[in-house]
Image (cartoon, rainbow, N blue to C red; front, side, top):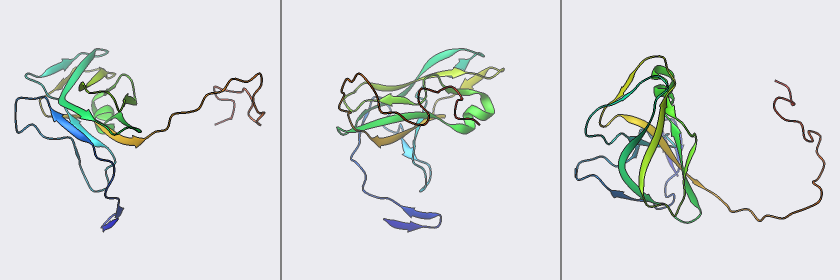
Length: 159
């Protein structure tokens, strides 16, 4: 761990390998925008601008495939500024990239705003957090342990 002006920074996480799918040798690797960022910025790999009408869903390519280590996933999340300013977000959020997937990272995006949004080549459109996961051991039972909440849901715990 090293010290940064805004606090400690972890070093030495899992090894993640990216495969460049773009013929452009200068297409940038997903990267952390700052020393405190936990998500790798993913950019739109487009040959021409992509226009999103309000309510429209389209798949945005990134030009990268990834090899995550077993026991890890890539959690793909919207970029908050893009969602707030333009209404552009991921239709399935967070999306999961399984450790054994080797295809292109492609982002199903939707324009939830009221105006048309244009995405240009190189625009940062999402972020990917690398997270450790565990597989659960499943059992079947005739009953479940009681809790104070019980089966209450959909706002049953108050505000």
